Image (cartoon, rainbow, N blue to C red; front, top):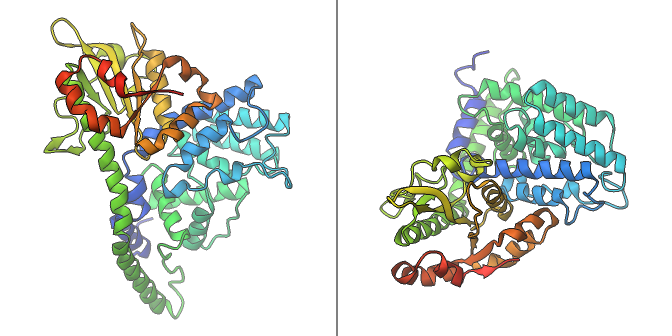
Length: 436
């Protein structure tokens, strides 16, 4: 159905897209967002595998599930508090996947099916099968896991998104009910198809719009166009949109802080790029970061345009392409040999979990020789967070890989002298700290 020329929803979406502090620009277009999809998928696979093997345990804290949900919760405002629904509530005995082995195995089968399925019909069948079991407390909060597995099929789910959907449509979707989630999903898909030119095939965009409406940042457009006071309602709504535009100006400070974080991340990548070149290595910059502005040019200037073939076809190559910085050995003719001398994940404010997973993909799939120089690069004050992540049972394998922590301060203070007088990896190893 074509949209009327004076469509309030279209007006709303257009203004929302242009708002630098709304979720479309601050989260959906955030370049770090897409880097987490593969690592979260890997985390969901780990949960399913541990449940199948009987090693998952009976507690959320310290589990592989907590690791992956924590990574989702770090995805800026849309997923803040995503772990609340998974915390064990002893008085209510929910969610009942910790004390009931049968329910836990059913949850594991659900996750495994959703990881492997490729069609909408298959995904919905898995959801309905889980819903039929009526496991206490295991409601559509799991849709946040599904979103990172199938972003074009499963929209995220939280209170603000539900409130936004109800405000936009006049529906009465309730929390904690899979049937209501599926009905809302159908309505979201219809809405997304109607306004896809302003939104995206990725349902994160429309979910962000509903989140901003449901959290009170944006007013839903009036729905009662046929009532006698429709013009008054439209005028009031337009005035509220104007108020939001003024509020966006006041949010500029918070937005600038988020952008500063991204700039700092890029700046540190630039340090590592320049140091790698100075030490004689060929340098690879994460595929989705190469075009970022850095200094007077782009971050990828002077770096490899493509991974060497041996790395490009290795297991986990898709994740390896997203590692922030790789230093590659050169052969006798000065060409990149495909052997990784050093790998660096810069974790300024983003999920440490995702970086560790990419390191594992590289180290366990690297051709010809083991990668022994792996570095998590982060602000000095994040060292406890790094150590806490590596202490999780889910990352027991990482201990064999001798990952080191490289603090910003050491890199900032010594990178110039390392570039002038350093040889190979020795200089970097000298200032890095052993983990865990």
